[in-house]
Length: 168
Image 1: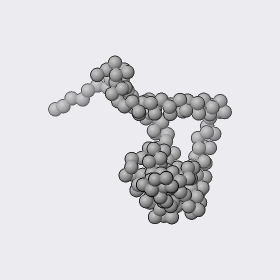
Image 2: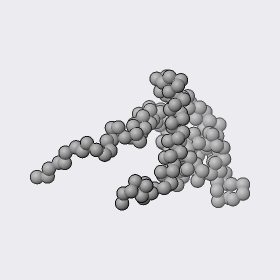
Image 3: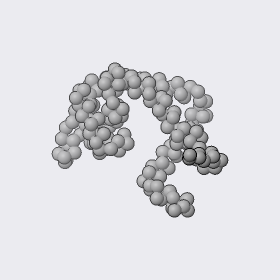
Image 4: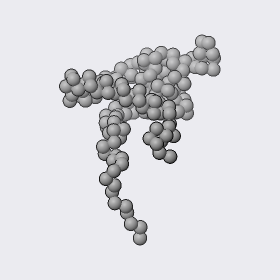
């Protein structure tokens, strides 16, 4: 019979690990939004993210969209395909290089985006209502710094992290 190891008092504890806590907050508020856009518009999570990007960046290409949404090329292509099928986006050949199609939001895509964004704004307002003005400024500043550092961690990869920590 295998014996279980006792819980360690040192090391990572998932319940207090900052990335996991950030993930939980994001997942908990994403579920009602995802339910709304899925039921109302037939959008996938990738489709919604791409719609939000092209609402902000008209004529973005798939590579730009994928980077902005943190999606792999396959998911990006499927999401763009879904949006074009729904009539929420159009794909046009790139002006300088026809291999890079530009994706733009349509009028019906803008209408869908605005309805989803209104719910997203209501979620954000409810979260921020729990914080003082000072706490809002602090969290905004902290998130900006965390976004920068997380990008550096991602770019460096796990080997760099271990090297920096002096582990092997």
